Image (cartoon, rainbow, N blue to C red; front, side, top):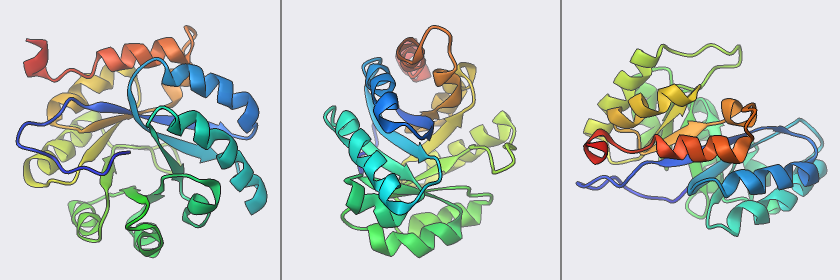
Length: 218
């Protein structure tokens, strides 16, 4: 994900693609490559099934070129200590404590994003500590998430007050437009794209078509 600050004239939002939990990196590389061709993707959040460190690094090494050849950033879900070894661009940390523990090992060379921010205070602290972006609305470890209205409210608050980009998590395609209208700089989308019977590439292209801000659609 590009390191950027919000400007007075916000750029069009971009997709932040979240993978399923990956075990077979070589097999998934083909599906990922096809999905990336469906739209301009800012970043891919790579989720990896638990394994030993060497296996995890090898998976990252297989998938990093697939993503980065398109000028898309590869961000690991956690695992800050293998980012450099695998050739990834950064890590996404869930929860303020995990972010604070890892940010010093990632910045300034690598991206450090933060999610799992349950309060406005936590979000502000993450921004103050150097987060390259904050993510709102993702499910917790039990699959629970705030209501869409609550997510939209949090994004609108952040977008009005802070320059650090925010990512809104969309659980389905219909949530994309409200997140964009609230001011999200990026929209995170994952499971519903990979489960789409039309294929991930078509689902990604459809998601991209929903990213126009209201003033652009008028």
